[in-house]
Length: 356
Ligand code: HPA
Ligand code: ZN
Image 1 (cartoon, helix red, strand yellow):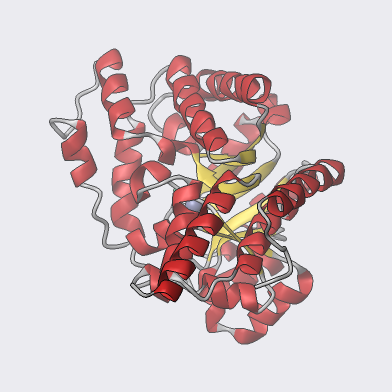
Image 2: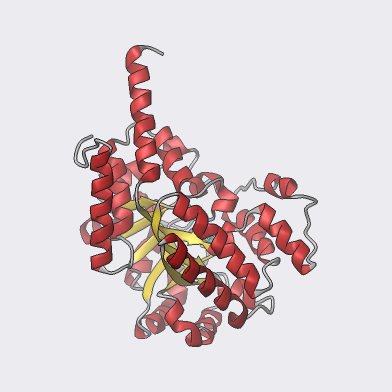
């Protein structure tokens, strides 16, 4: 390594350290996807549930996915160990502790009711656990938490409507509606009545789109569902008119780099289109999606991207962090406060928000 290479490498390390310690929001994480193999085994033992794998190491070794569906099969199987209110409390508390360590000040967290109600585990079981962990995170970690109820798109719209109906008594404990699970063949058009109902109930609306599905699903999520934010959305890049629209209208894409590599949505991290979307003016940021399955929490995702894509500048890194705060559903005052904190953090590290 010559002197200038060494210089560049130490600058990169300093930037990574600054990003990891920076205040940030995580806007795309599934609580069921934070189930680490060790906790899965502990809960299986606690609840007398048999697992297909002999050890947490064997389970982790099974995390080699060819596509979204191969991951989802394992993810739904993992949910089976979640049986009691305490299980959901333990699961969420473990995530909040990790998030706080990563500098997360705001977490908007998906939960999948149908993955539990289908197994006879009802709202009265999982909601008190999720609510308790969130209250503790707010009190002990200073984290701002909001839950987003997510409906499984491989099931019918009527099943989604019934889920939203069953959630009515818990309405104060979630802020929005999301749509996840197998994307191909389950287009946004399938859920127009559900999203109209969510709008009528005053819920914020987001939807997974353009992960494995085409750019047209991103467009339809906006036009047919009134989605305010798109989860993943990376395939929007196939349609430059759509990219321009996202940039013009300030529609955020909650991008999950490690997830995209693990599920073969992109060939490798160096080929990820996060930089091109960012440079096209789209409000993108970095999230973990299902961190227990994809190899890391939010800072691991920032680190992986910044290490693989040397073209991402200091100003780009700042923009990703700022976008995360700005795209959250927190109050404008709260977002302004966090943004001031981010700016102070950036300046204290001798970094210039505007400079490459
Ligand atoms: N895509 C679709 N469904 C999901 C995901 C995802 O990345 N994670 C959990 N459910
Ligand atoms: Zn997701």
